[in-house]
Length: 166
Image (cartoon, rainbow, N blue to C red; front, side):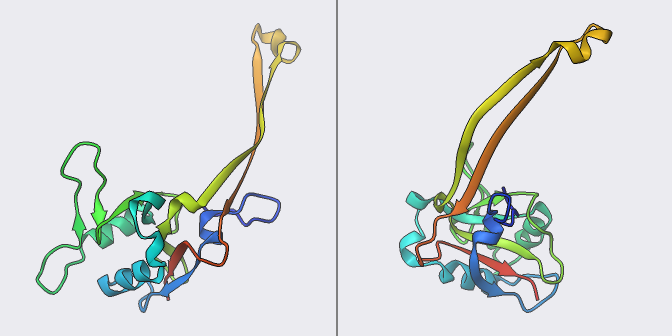
């Protein structure tokens, strides 16, 4: 889950992430803020072994793709080979439309070791066949139940940080 509160529902990755950077603008992000966010994560987590990268909504991604450095070069680097992810500051980008869009006070970008976000299957799927309920219409119904939990595994090392809009 992306935005679960952790109270009577799974902890979402946004809630489990630690404070990283607060953007200066309400609906914009600068390249310097992204660099600050990336470096707010401990260097030991900034590698592929921890599935390090960025996560954001598609409209946030669109705005960030337009950012350029001082040499007028885009910060965004498209994946040039099939199966290779797009890169931002050398890290993979995960588009998640359950993230908030650019607006006042929203957490718009996550950066960190996504392998430290764990989803646990609490109970196996229970499937029931409902013959009686639908028999009047010559139908058979099925219903399934499953339960999951999630949490950022953080032993004080803050493996995932968030960027919050002003």
